[in-house]
Image 1: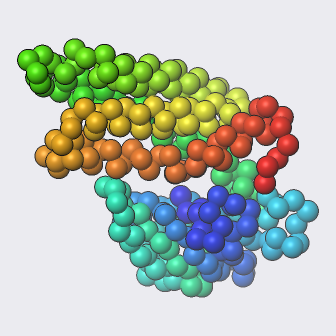
Image 2: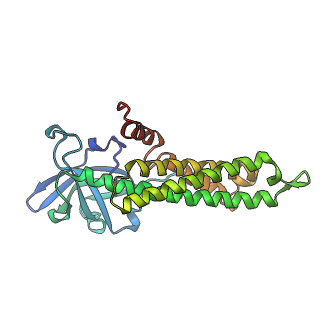
Image 3: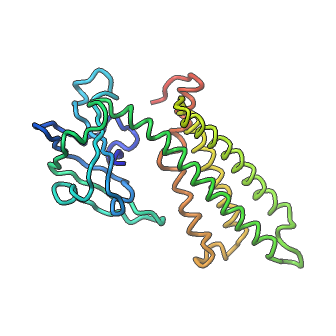
Length: 266
């Protein structure tokens, strides 16, 4: 999914990538960043502005989405630049230079793409919540086994409450996040509004996974930093979800405005 841009981040309505209709084609120019798995995918959903921001009544109007054949695009106007990063994740920067897309690849109605993207984002946030929950259970399983077996001062370190309590707390938070994840999934499957639930599921799951990761690394001691234990790798990977695909602060802003009816902060 090609949405994020370097200069706009999560201020999606201000994206600068344009798609201008010329005959039976759209000509795309612009740039995207943090676009994952381009090298392993056949198709991409691309968000571009088809009507200038200055010409629309609402800033969310005038955006459209297109189905892009990646293999064809890299031959005729799309450049892919991989971004080396700290986690085991393949992501890229994309550049569009007069990329032509058949008009029939427009998804839905021209100018209504932002609404369609939001629907997809709810599914994405719920999916990421599920991923974080899986990570959380991995950390809990790994650290629980380790502290049962690791003996210091003549006793397993898992016998100490100072070790038990952070692990137990992280497990409780993962279980709670899992319930919110399933609530968001149920609402989505029933085609009911689920923006708040999807955001809360992502928030809770990312937080719970990060706390489990901290406990796992801490109680492995120096071995937590050794590559052979995989803890340091998973620790880095789960940290991503405090930032992406939506940051923790933006979720809090969403809940404050749309659930608690507080004044918009930005």
